[in-house]
Length: 362
View 1 (cartoon, rainbow, N blue to C red):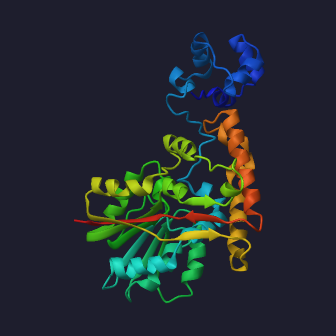
View 2 (tube, rainbow, N blue to C red):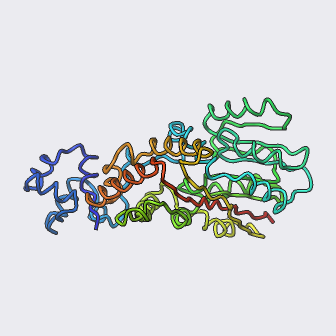
Protein backbone atom coordinates (compact mmCIF):
# COMPACT_ATOMS: atom_id res chain seq x y z
CA UNK A 1 0.00 0.00 0.00
CA UNK A 2 1.34 3.45 -0.92
CA UNK A 3 0.16 6.40 1.22
CA UNK A 4 0.22 9.92 -0.19
CA UNK A 5 1.09 11.63 3.10
CA UNK A 6 4.26 13.32 1.84
CA UNK A 7 2.60 14.71 -1.29
CA UNK A 8 -0.42 15.98 0.65
CA UNK A 9 1.80 17.51 3.35
CA UNK A 10 3.92 19.34 0.77
CA UNK A 11 0.84 20.57 -1.07
CA UNK A 12 -0.41 22.05 2.21
CA UNK A 13 2.99 23.66 2.82
CA UNK A 14 3.57 21.83 6.10
CA UNK A 15 6.88 20.59 7.46
CA UNK A 16 7.13 17.13 9.02
CA UNK A 17 7.37 18.77 12.45
CA UNK A 18 4.22 20.85 11.86
CA UNK A 19 2.24 17.82 10.70
CA UNK A 20 3.57 15.80 13.64
CA UNK A 21 2.32 18.46 16.07
CA UNK A 22 -1.12 18.42 14.44
CA UNK A 23 -1.27 14.61 14.73
CA UNK A 24 0.27 14.52 18.23
CA UNK A 25 3.13 12.26 17.12
CA UNK A 26 6.88 12.75 16.64
CA UNK A 27 8.30 14.06 13.35
CA UNK A 28 10.25 10.77 13.11
CA UNK A 29 6.90 8.99 12.97
CA UNK A 30 5.80 11.19 10.08
CA UNK A 31 9.06 10.39 8.29
CA UNK A 32 8.46 6.67 8.70
CA UNK A 33 4.91 7.01 7.35
CA UNK A 34 6.16 8.89 4.31
CA UNK A 35 8.94 6.43 3.54
CA UNK A 36 6.76 3.34 3.93
CA UNK A 37 8.67 2.06 6.97
CA UNK A 38 5.57 2.17 9.19
CA UNK A 39 1.90 2.95 8.55
CA UNK A 40 -0.32 5.21 10.67
CA UNK A 41 -2.74 3.60 13.07
CA UNK A 42 -6.30 3.56 11.75
CA UNK A 43 -7.23 6.17 14.36
CA UNK A 44 -4.93 8.70 12.65
CA UNK A 45 -6.60 8.47 9.23
CA UNK A 46 -9.66 10.68 10.04
CA UNK A 47 -7.33 13.32 11.52
CA UNK A 48 -5.12 13.27 8.42
CA UNK A 49 -8.22 13.51 6.25
CA UNK A 50 -9.32 16.65 8.12
CA UNK A 51 -5.86 18.25 7.90
CA UNK A 52 -5.45 17.66 4.19
CA UNK A 53 -9.07 18.19 3.18
CA UNK A 54 -9.27 14.95 1.19
CA UNK A 55 -10.99 11.60 1.64
CA UNK A 56 -9.36 8.65 3.36
CA UNK A 57 -9.27 6.90 -0.04
CA UNK A 58 -6.86 9.54 -1.34
CA UNK A 59 -4.58 9.21 1.70
CA UNK A 60 -4.56 5.42 1.38
CA UNK A 61 -3.82 5.57 -2.34
CA UNK A 62 -7.13 3.92 -3.31
CA UNK A 63 -7.83 6.76 -5.75
CA UNK A 64 -5.22 8.82 -7.63
CA UNK A 65 -3.69 11.82 -5.91
CA UNK A 66 -3.85 14.78 -8.28
CA UNK A 67 -1.13 17.31 -7.55
CA UNK A 68 -1.55 20.02 -10.16
CA UNK A 69 2.00 21.32 -9.63
CA UNK A 70 3.62 17.89 -10.05
CA UNK A 71 1.51 16.48 -12.85
CA UNK A 72 3.11 16.78 -16.28
CA UNK A 73 1.05 18.71 -18.78
CA UNK A 74 1.69 16.42 -21.73
CA UNK A 75 -1.01 18.06 -23.79
CA UNK A 76 0.34 21.61 -23.31
CA UNK A 77 2.90 23.33 -25.52
CA UNK A 78 4.95 24.56 -22.55
CA UNK A 79 5.87 21.02 -21.51
CA UNK A 80 7.16 20.06 -24.96
CA UNK A 81 8.95 23.37 -25.53
CA UNK A 82 11.55 22.28 -22.96
CA UNK A 83 12.07 18.94 -24.69
CA UNK A 84 12.33 19.80 -28.38
CA UNK A 85 15.84 18.45 -28.86
CA UNK A 86 15.02 15.22 -27.05
CA UNK A 87 11.82 14.75 -29.09
CA UNK A 88 13.78 15.10 -32.35
CA UNK A 89 16.25 12.46 -31.23
CA UNK A 90 13.58 10.01 -30.12
CA UNK A 91 11.69 10.40 -33.39
CA UNK A 92 14.83 9.57 -35.35
CA UNK A 93 15.73 6.64 -33.10
CA UNK A 94 12.28 5.12 -33.47
CA UNK A 95 11.96 5.88 -37.15
CA UNK A 96 12.77 3.52 -40.00
CA UNK A 97 12.76 5.17 -43.45
CA UNK A 98 12.89 1.83 -45.26
CA UNK A 99 9.83 0.51 -43.46
CA UNK A 100 7.90 3.76 -43.87
CA UNK A 101 8.56 3.79 -47.60
CA UNK A 102 7.28 0.23 -47.84
CA UNK A 103 4.23 1.11 -45.72
CA UNK A 104 3.20 4.19 -47.73
CA UNK A 105 3.95 2.83 -51.18
CA UNK A 106 3.12 -0.87 -50.90
CA UNK A 107 0.70 -1.18 -47.98
CA UNK A 108 -1.40 1.97 -48.38
CA UNK A 109 -0.57 2.26 -52.07
CA UNK A 110 -2.18 5.59 -52.91
CA UNK A 111 -2.81 5.90 -56.66
CA UNK A 112 -3.78 9.58 -56.80
CA UNK A 113 -2.91 12.81 -55.01
CA UNK A 114 -3.68 12.84 -51.30
CA UNK A 115 -4.57 15.74 -48.99
CA UNK A 116 -2.96 15.07 -45.60
CA UNK A 117 -3.84 16.71 -42.27
CA UNK A 118 -1.30 16.18 -39.47
CA UNK A 119 -2.49 16.78 -35.88
CA UNK A 120 0.24 17.94 -33.48
CA UNK A 121 2.66 18.22 -36.41
CA UNK A 122 5.52 19.80 -34.44
CA UNK A 123 8.30 20.86 -36.78
CA UNK A 124 6.76 18.97 -39.74
CA UNK A 125 8.72 15.73 -39.29
CA UNK A 126 5.97 13.52 -40.67
CA UNK A 127 5.34 15.80 -43.63
CA UNK A 128 9.04 15.71 -44.54
CA UNK A 129 8.95 11.92 -44.53
CA UNK A 130 5.58 11.45 -46.21
CA UNK A 131 5.35 13.93 -49.09
CA UNK A 132 8.24 12.48 -51.15
CA UNK A 133 6.44 9.12 -51.06
CA UNK A 134 2.95 10.30 -52.08
CA UNK A 135 1.65 10.73 -55.63
CA UNK A 136 2.44 14.00 -57.39
CA UNK A 137 0.08 16.82 -56.45
CA UNK A 138 -0.39 15.67 -52.85
CA UNK A 139 -0.55 18.35 -50.14
CA UNK A 140 0.28 18.53 -46.45
CA UNK A 141 -1.36 20.61 -43.72
CA UNK A 142 -0.04 20.63 -40.17
CA UNK A 143 -1.73 21.82 -36.96
CA UNK A 144 0.52 22.80 -34.05
CA UNK A 145 -0.01 25.03 -31.02
CA UNK A 146 3.67 25.93 -30.59
CA UNK A 147 4.44 28.79 -33.00
CA UNK A 148 8.20 28.24 -32.83
CA UNK A 149 7.60 24.74 -34.20
CA UNK A 150 5.48 25.91 -37.13
CA UNK A 151 8.08 28.57 -37.91
CA UNK A 152 10.78 25.90 -38.00
CA UNK A 153 8.61 23.79 -40.29
CA UNK A 154 8.00 26.76 -42.59
CA UNK A 155 11.75 27.23 -42.85
CA UNK A 156 12.14 23.73 -44.22
CA UNK A 157 9.12 23.52 -46.49
CA UNK A 158 9.67 26.96 -48.01
CA UNK A 159 12.72 25.50 -49.75
CA UNK A 160 10.68 22.77 -51.45
CA UNK A 161 8.10 22.59 -54.21
CA UNK A 162 5.55 20.80 -52.03
CA UNK A 163 2.05 22.16 -51.42
CA UNK A 164 1.87 22.78 -47.69
CA UNK A 165 0.21 24.87 -44.99
CA UNK A 166 0.80 25.20 -41.26
CA UNK A 167 -1.88 26.30 -38.81
CA UNK A 168 -0.86 27.54 -35.36
CA UNK A 169 -3.89 26.64 -33.26
CA UNK A 170 -5.06 24.32 -30.51
CA UNK A 171 -5.95 21.10 -32.32
CA UNK A 172 -9.03 20.66 -30.13
CA UNK A 173 -10.39 24.07 -31.18
CA UNK A 174 -9.48 23.72 -34.85
CA UNK A 175 -12.41 23.61 -37.26
CA UNK A 176 -11.22 22.44 -40.71
CA UNK A 177 -12.19 24.66 -43.63
CA UNK A 178 -11.95 21.68 -45.98
CA UNK A 179 -12.07 17.89 -45.90
CA UNK A 180 -9.01 15.67 -46.15
CA UNK A 181 -8.18 12.23 -47.54
CA UNK A 182 -5.86 11.28 -44.70
CA UNK A 183 -5.69 12.46 -41.06
CA UNK A 184 -2.53 11.45 -39.18
CA UNK A 185 -0.94 11.76 -35.72
CA UNK A 186 2.53 10.60 -34.73
CA UNK A 187 3.57 9.79 -31.12
CA UNK A 188 0.72 11.95 -29.81
CA UNK A 189 -2.36 9.99 -28.85
CA UNK A 190 -0.82 8.13 -25.88
CA UNK A 191 -0.08 11.44 -24.13
CA UNK A 192 -3.63 12.74 -24.29
CA UNK A 193 -5.97 12.45 -21.28
CA UNK A 194 -8.95 12.12 -23.66
CA UNK A 195 -7.76 10.32 -26.81
CA UNK A 196 -11.33 9.78 -27.98
CA UNK A 197 -11.77 13.54 -28.22
CA UNK A 198 -8.91 13.87 -30.71
CA UNK A 199 -10.05 10.86 -32.74
CA UNK A 200 -13.48 12.46 -33.12
CA UNK A 201 -11.82 15.71 -34.22
CA UNK A 202 -9.75 13.81 -36.78
CA UNK A 203 -12.84 11.99 -37.98
CA UNK A 204 -14.65 15.28 -38.56
CA UNK A 205 -11.82 16.45 -40.82
CA UNK A 206 -12.12 13.53 -43.25
CA UNK A 207 -13.94 13.11 -46.53
CA UNK A 208 -16.35 10.16 -46.83
CA UNK A 209 -14.10 7.15 -47.32
CA UNK A 210 -11.12 9.05 -45.89
CA UNK A 211 -8.48 7.34 -43.80
CA UNK A 212 -7.10 7.86 -40.30
CA UNK A 213 -3.53 6.79 -39.48
CA UNK A 214 -2.22 6.78 -35.90
CA UNK A 215 1.40 5.92 -35.11
CA UNK A 216 2.36 5.20 -31.52
CA UNK A 217 4.23 2.80 -29.26
CA UNK A 218 3.44 0.12 -26.70
CA UNK A 219 5.97 0.43 -23.88
CA UNK A 220 5.50 -3.21 -22.83
CA UNK A 221 6.62 -4.31 -26.29
CA UNK A 222 9.68 -2.10 -25.96
CA UNK A 223 10.51 -3.47 -22.52
CA UNK A 224 10.22 -7.06 -23.76
CA UNK A 225 12.47 -6.16 -26.70
CA UNK A 226 15.34 -4.71 -24.67
CA UNK A 227 18.52 -6.53 -23.70
CA UNK A 228 21.87 -5.27 -22.50
CA UNK A 229 25.12 -7.12 -22.09
CA UNK A 230 25.23 -5.88 -18.50
CA UNK A 231 22.80 -8.65 -17.61
CA UNK A 232 25.32 -11.25 -18.75
CA UNK A 233 28.31 -9.57 -17.12
CA UNK A 234 26.73 -8.86 -13.75
CA UNK A 235 24.33 -11.35 -12.18
CA UNK A 236 22.97 -8.60 -9.97
CA UNK A 237 22.15 -6.38 -12.95
CA UNK A 238 18.58 -7.50 -13.53
CA UNK A 239 16.43 -5.48 -15.86
CA UNK A 240 13.92 -3.57 -13.77
CA UNK A 241 10.18 -3.75 -14.28
CA UNK A 242 8.94 -0.35 -15.50
CA UNK A 243 5.26 -1.28 -15.47
CA UNK A 244 4.55 0.08 -11.94
CA UNK A 245 5.87 3.47 -13.07
CA UNK A 246 3.84 3.35 -16.29
CA UNK A 247 0.73 2.30 -14.33
CA UNK A 248 1.17 5.39 -12.17
CA UNK A 249 1.38 7.56 -15.28
CA UNK A 250 -1.72 5.89 -16.70
CA UNK A 251 -3.86 6.30 -13.57
CA UNK A 252 -2.75 9.94 -13.33
CA UNK A 253 -3.59 10.55 -16.99
CA UNK A 254 -0.03 11.44 -17.95
CA UNK A 255 0.27 8.85 -20.71
CA UNK A 256 -1.12 5.45 -21.62
CA UNK A 257 1.81 3.06 -22.04
CA UNK A 258 -0.33 0.51 -23.94
CA UNK A 259 -2.11 2.98 -26.20
CA UNK A 260 -0.77 1.63 -29.50
CA UNK A 261 -2.42 -1.74 -28.89
CA UNK A 262 -5.68 -0.07 -27.83
CA UNK A 263 -5.98 2.03 -30.98
CA UNK A 264 -8.00 -0.47 -33.07
CA UNK A 265 -10.59 -0.62 -30.28
CA UNK A 266 -10.81 3.18 -30.05
CA UNK A 267 -11.16 3.53 -33.81
CA UNK A 268 -13.91 0.90 -33.90
CA UNK A 269 -15.78 2.76 -31.14
CA UNK A 270 -15.74 5.89 -33.33
CA UNK A 271 -17.13 4.05 -36.35
CA UNK A 272 -14.01 3.43 -38.44
CA UNK A 273 -13.99 0.29 -40.56
CA UNK A 274 -11.44 -1.90 -42.39
CA UNK A 275 -9.13 -1.62 -39.40
CA UNK A 276 -5.54 -2.72 -39.90
CA UNK A 277 -2.31 -2.52 -37.91
CA UNK A 278 1.38 -3.02 -38.65
CA UNK A 279 4.55 -2.77 -36.56
CA UNK A 280 7.77 -1.20 -37.79
CA UNK A 281 10.73 -3.56 -37.98
CA UNK A 282 13.19 -1.04 -36.50
CA UNK A 283 15.64 -2.55 -33.98
CA UNK A 284 18.43 -0.34 -32.62
CA UNK A 285 21.74 -2.03 -31.77
CA UNK A 286 23.87 0.17 -29.55
CA UNK A 287 27.59 -0.61 -29.71
CA UNK A 288 29.86 2.36 -28.86
CA UNK A 289 33.01 0.50 -29.93
CA UNK A 290 31.69 0.60 -33.51
CA UNK A 291 32.88 3.94 -35.01
CA UNK A 292 29.84 3.98 -37.31
CA UNK A 293 27.61 4.17 -34.25
CA UNK A 294 29.34 6.99 -32.43
CA UNK A 295 26.52 9.39 -33.39
CA UNK A 296 23.97 7.00 -31.89
CA UNK A 297 25.95 6.85 -28.66
CA UNK A 298 26.17 10.63 -28.45
CA UNK A 299 22.42 10.93 -28.99
CA UNK A 300 21.58 8.38 -26.31
CA UNK A 301 23.89 10.04 -23.77
CA UNK A 302 22.26 13.40 -24.49
CA UNK A 303 18.76 11.97 -24.06
CA UNK A 304 19.74 10.25 -20.83
CA UNK A 305 21.13 13.49 -19.38
CA UNK A 306 17.78 15.19 -20.02
CA UNK A 307 15.59 12.55 -18.37
CA UNK A 308 13.65 13.76 -15.33
CA UNK A 309 14.57 10.67 -13.29
CA UNK A 310 18.27 11.51 -13.78
CA UNK A 311 17.82 15.10 -12.66
CA UNK A 312 15.63 14.27 -9.66
CA UNK A 313 17.07 10.91 -8.60
CA UNK A 314 15.10 8.91 -6.03
CA UNK A 315 12.65 11.79 -5.52
CA UNK A 316 11.30 11.22 -9.03
CA UNK A 317 10.18 7.70 -8.10
CA UNK A 318 8.99 8.63 -4.60
CA UNK A 319 6.55 11.07 -6.20
CA UNK A 320 5.24 8.22 -8.32
CA UNK A 321 4.27 5.76 -5.64
CA UNK A 322 7.54 3.96 -4.89
CA UNK A 323 8.82 3.26 -1.39
CA UNK A 324 12.18 4.76 -0.42
CA UNK A 325 13.98 1.44 -0.97
CA UNK A 326 12.32 0.88 -4.35
CA UNK A 327 13.16 4.44 -5.43
CA UNK A 328 16.80 4.00 -4.48
CA UNK A 329 16.93 0.65 -6.29
CA UNK A 330 15.53 2.25 -9.45
CA UNK A 331 18.02 5.11 -9.26
CA UNK A 332 20.93 2.72 -8.72
CA UNK A 333 19.86 0.58 -11.68
CA UNK A 334 19.82 3.52 -14.07
CA UNK A 335 23.15 4.77 -12.74
CA UNK A 336 24.79 1.38 -13.29
CA UNK A 337 23.19 0.97 -16.71
CA UNK A 338 24.47 4.38 -17.76
CA UNK A 339 27.98 3.49 -16.60
CA UNK A 340 27.82 0.24 -18.55
CA UNK A 341 26.57 1.86 -21.76
CA UNK A 342 29.36 4.42 -21.53
CA UNK A 343 31.99 1.68 -21.65
CA UNK A 344 33.48 0.63 -24.98
CA UNK A 345 32.66 -3.05 -24.47
CA UNK A 346 28.94 -2.44 -23.98
CA UNK A 347 26.19 -3.58 -26.30
CA UNK A 348 22.42 -3.25 -26.09
CA UNK A 349 19.42 -4.07 -28.27
CA UNK A 350 16.27 -1.96 -28.26
CA UNK A 351 13.15 -2.85 -30.24
CA UNK A 352 11.20 0.24 -31.24
CA UNK A 353 7.87 -1.46 -31.98
CA UNK A 354 6.08 1.51 -33.56
CA UNK A 355 2.48 0.61 -34.37
CA UNK A 356 0.84 1.89 -37.56
CA UNK A 357 -2.93 1.64 -36.97
CA UNK A 358 -5.33 2.76 -39.68
CA UNK A 359 -8.95 2.56 -40.73
CA UNK A 360 -11.48 4.13 -43.08
CA UNK A 361 -14.46 6.40 -42.59
CA UNK A 362 -17.70 5.01 -43.96
